[in-house]
Image (tube, rainbow, N blue to C red; front, side, top):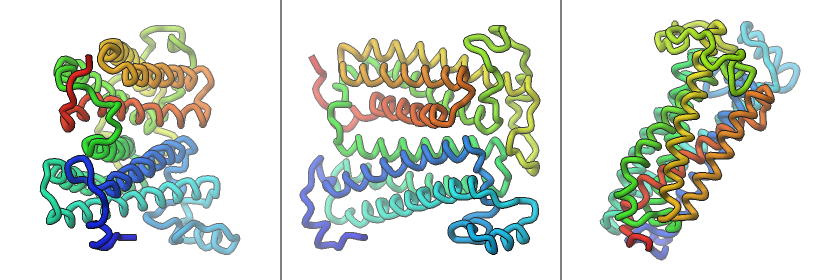
Length: 355
């Protein structure tokens, strides 16, 4: 429910002007975004991306057809898309949560601009800018959600949709940190300056690796190599890089299950593995350098990195179990959030460098 002007005025303010209620609202958005990201991964992994052939409803329903008569009418309307209840509900539940997140972000942006007349600190100005950018981002994300269905899981759109989900979560997290929350995750100004080049490189590598993971998922290449650490017993298996990373794939076919041949999928899978090695080296070195500056943050980065690598290996040797694959997606999001904290949180508080 939208707060009245009097209730907004009554809230105690901290962090140079941002209300406690606003910080709690952003925290709620972060929690909701995590749910959306995890549900998105679950929906892809159970092959429910086309569980509903239309958008934003499902076979013309606000929920999904579940009675026998509703299913018959749905299949008559969409003869090329038989109803599969195991796939309709994950798709629609994901849409419900994503729609709720869009409404929350809209309210957050409106409320930030409404508070413009009640204060003009640097934090409030920055929050207004960030919430406006976030609103544009999530509207674009909704469009990509629709195109995911209407373009029948075209890999470019599916990957962009995944990146948009991570970006939405990252923006909310950034807003929360820049508002002064979680001071234990902040570095001193001098420490931040010393680590800037390395931390930004690691941040960029993680984004590339997430994109590669999305490309693996959207092209169904997760099981292209069934052995570890080799692939078909080789450290450089037969691969078709040109086909695997062809971003001019035709729009129109149904990409459910993927259309690439095995050597193209091997190329995608193997590049994702090599990317994981690069990220592991860079992030592990960053955690080592962080240790003397913020031991808690360093330990968190090292732990998440270890778990994420382990989950990636288990995805191969255990043939992509649903729980492990979903957690691997969540682990990528958590790694991104830690690196956002390392890279961008110190710029607000200007905390003194830790001894």
